[in-house]
Image (tube, rainbow, N blue to C red; front, side):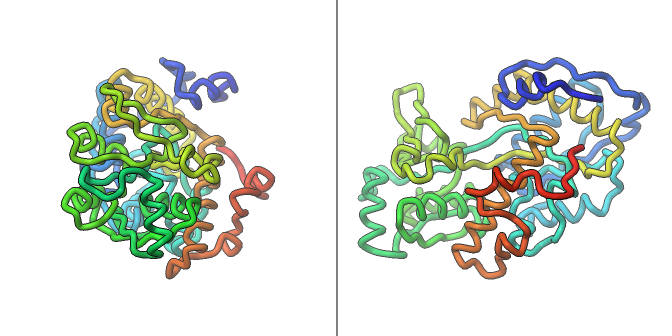
Length: 354
């Protein structure tokens, strides 16, 4: 099957309601239930996105799709589990962020864009929020305090060496400040830590903070999309791009929802999965979920998904190495370029798109 450039462009922008892709000859598949193995706990952004996509595909096709959660190891437990299954399309990896943490932290030596075929569905944005009674009334107040008190500003994250910690580190580096990251077991407890006054600033995702922002229990100081987010009551969640211009070109800094199948999956089966994935992410049900949680649809397939997988891995590798995180592998040892040189480097020697 060959998909035209115009179709891919429309899907990549997330603006065209694609109803179908060319048919393929694999009428007998699937003959039994499919399992989606989500890398994180139930209730998080990855889980919500993957469950909604699976729900829509099941409704559209009649396929039986079970969604299970195998959290642990920064996504490694679920990844290892799926690698232990046959590459027959019956076990999907419910991944996020293109597994960009595994190689930089030494979990695997396999390049993500060689082992997996990812399908990017949508993204979420990072958020720094405080209680209304906080001494910080703006992001500028945070920067002023942190510069006067290096390393004493505490920021909650959903663990250490993971997404919100990484995005926080990029923002902090751009602002020229040092932050003390306090890890919690998930976005919800990290948000509650901010609400309970355990940390000075609650880190996490806009989707994790939004209901507390709407109810007046939290005040957003910055978020990592390219533009301000304006709520129905006129409240503005300011883009960090206006506050830290040096990182504007890197925006959006985001969580990325990327279900995947093994790259060795038979092509005809992958084509069928991809076609139903495209229908699902363009469905009204999925778009309604995105809107409610302040996620954004951003669909990438095949070589476009591969390219982004490599780019975000290079950013993570550099960020973790620069932070001096124990066990982090340098971009050079991984054969990755500095992110600023990525466009010259891609595609790497030996790369073969699906």
